[in-house]
Image (tube, rainbow, N blue to C red; front, side, top):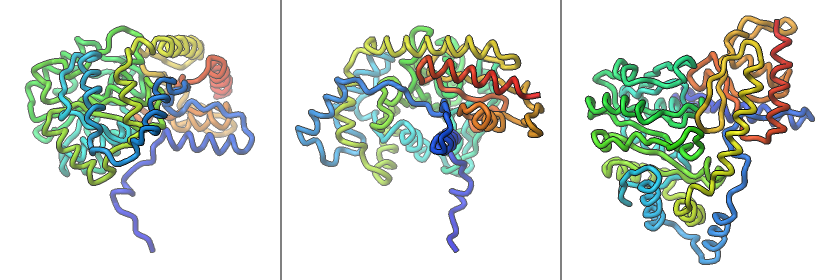
Length: 397
């Protein structure tokens, strides 16, 4: 009999991937399912990036690369950090990985010992918790509900810090909520972190360019905590390069060296062709993304307008990313054909089976009162999806 590891058995399957799988199964049965479960831009990778990949192939960039990435790629990332974020990271402070998810795993495995506490504001991206558990750390979740725009304060953070606290993990703009921390809000968090130099903050900023409220703000901008912050980013979201698999960190040199060591044993470097193509993305002026960002903002407004007309749903105004995270708790206890909805996971399964719309329940993101809807789809698709959600919810009694 095969005995699987306790580590594996303790790990939850990714809820976003599970729901996408379920919706594909229904589609294969001929059901007209609208899937809004995955966080994937519906735009194509820009042509100039694809051309850079073709040129890399023609120039035979097809061999192993340095584990943390080509030197000239890391130089381009260094320039990007300075240009877009006013952050000064030298080449040896940057590690390129096979997606930002691996960047985060490298970081946690480099820092966390069994029993170390990691503070994670909820709602959070689904993999944060599971990566901490793999490292045998203890997730300490701080709930920040819709009435707080899903954001924590410095006081919230300080109340959760103990002598065992080793890390803080959060994102801005946030997946799943789309909430964006302002400079003043980050300054409030920085003031607390400065009191606890043993706490390392992971600032996941992969949605930085998909921002509808102005300038993106980075946590590492505050000099008093620069050496306590690891900035995580990648090319999947803004540059529509999800399948290319490239993420990166800017970090204190000791942490970058540790992540390089971990990665050297797990995967070595990411794809050489992806790395060459990413240089062109890093060197590009982000203003070329304005049409895509404008499209996402227009879709957000369409979805918000529709959801706010549905009785019982509570929705905030996301400032970035491409998600809406409605509070649906008013529907708990209601029934359809003898089946009673107890939580948002069950509500999402109901929406899938009855409304033929795939969303993701909020429990996996740390808030069981909500569900996540991605608006990375055409306006026509989103309009139809909101109408189906409204019709399905109206049948609950």
